[in-house]
Image 1 (tube, helix red, strand yellow):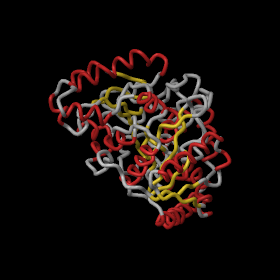
Image 2: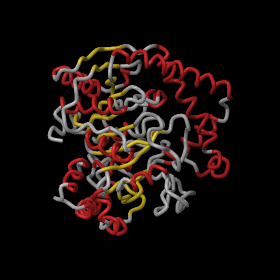
Image 3: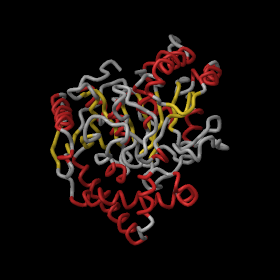
Length: 423
């Protein structure tokens, strides 16, 4: 993998050029793209021309190549949203987040594969660690492109678990920030109360660097070692749906953090959070039926059976049921805020297991959807593996609006596990 922070430092020091980094990415794409299938569109020559501009090397992202999920509009690439009927669509402008990346000196190398309209129907992408296994979704191509060393930074989005889960399956750092920290203007909407743009990179310091550079916020966690956090280990009501290996990974991370000086406490989540877990589907589906009204009303027969079935059922969710789910959400957020007064972050699984041996499914999002509904920052910490060598991700959940704190806690655990120690 390409470490974004290290590359940026070397460019800043004059030891490396953006063009040289781009050449490295191009070589990785030539070597692995036919097997991994991370991209829907690429323009390496246009990226090379952009890399020659001296201004990009002094901008915050230092001219690093970036992959952008194909649900974000791009003026210079087609944006098909993972569908056949939108294929070839050329937006009139960039999504706001894409413009922010360009302003920060990032070079958009190409569009990465998404599942159909960011739902569950898989695209062509395969897991770089084992092509017979899913890379996760819906940000399949973004996670896989980083894992395969094709780009140092990639953009994804999460409505259920579409950043954290593929990051876990592909063994990279994934950052789902607090709701709306990154703008979603110009990003295909699935659920306006849930959709959250996020980032992928090799390690926690890399994804924090990228987030800081794009947003001009104090989010970096490199340099001095982070202070020992107060970690709350939440096994949740679905703990028994995690594999033995995943439960072991959480215990390993907790014990390593504790040995490194963190205060680690087991917690039971308030029952209202279990209610919120169920409410997520109501909020998502009610909004999807409206956000995807054009696709459903005009292209229903071209949708995959899973999304078509979801929207068929969602047509029967009435406003009163939706409003009740939103009220549960509000109460749950307050209960979570109260719980986290005694801790800096929650430690919990990123996914039920390592990536399933399947290309027909992107894997379940059961360990993600609650936190997406809560709007809290989440970070997948890479570095652990199962007996077959497949990545196992553990997840840090921070307090809403305390994104740097979540990244710092994730970095602490990453260091305790021995991942990226020199960054």
